[in-house]
Image 1 (cartoon, rainbow, N blue to C red):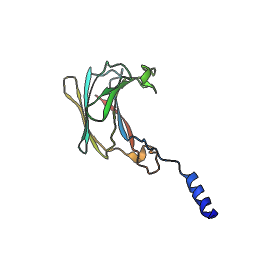
Image 2 (cartoon, rainbow, N blue to C red):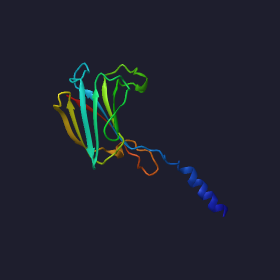
Image 3 (tube, helix red, strand yellow):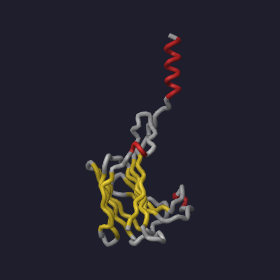
Length: 152
């Protein structure tokens, strides 16, 4: 019986507990293609969709840094300046970014971005490579995908 206990103890020490509160997500960071980093539009409409799940977001570029705006669907959108903690008003001093966080991690999804005049700015189908994103959980099932996208 002691042999079984030693084997069980060794296995228990070899594996950390999995995160029960793991939230899978896709995070898209939209940067301007302009040399000065300014956006061409004052407002953006962003829609991501897959497998019947849709997140429909709208944000003013003048929104205070770190102020999250809820989307229709399981997502939020905000403005970032590249700091590690935009919740304090931003201290990064980098180029502005529009950041969309979607609490869903599909194998493939469609992306549509429109400007303030609702003119199509970008459309794409993305296939996240979750296996290349540093997935960290016992079963490898907590998918997180972060991607920077340049908007014209």
